[in-house]
Image (tube, rainbow, N blue to C red; front, side):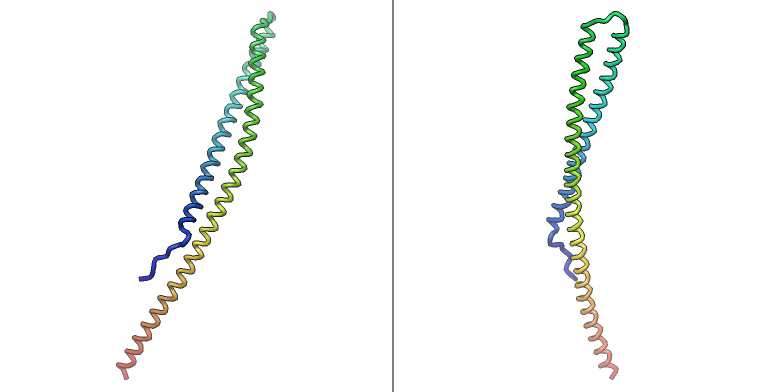
Length: 153
């Protein structure tokens, strides 16, 4: 019975696979943060549009209430500030995503290297095993043919 194939770097291969999965998880986490920030930015823009409409309606009404307009203007200023902050955070997250994408690509390359090396080692193992089996078969066949020749003579 031939010895079972064992890859000497199997634990390292598993670690590489874990690193790949971890990089995928981190990239997904970054995409999730980006999605939330973009959604928040969209909500801020919608809120600003509503406040702008309210301000226009208030101004076009004839009699202007200074207190209400000041509140709306302050709300719009705060909203604008929050939008700028959100845009800056989105840019940071996009940089983070690119870094994590590079990490993932490197992890995938490392894993592929180990997988290719494993396949190469397995092919070598099969060749050696086949040679040994062929040698045993040839020896057995030659012994049998020698025995058959001896009986016929």
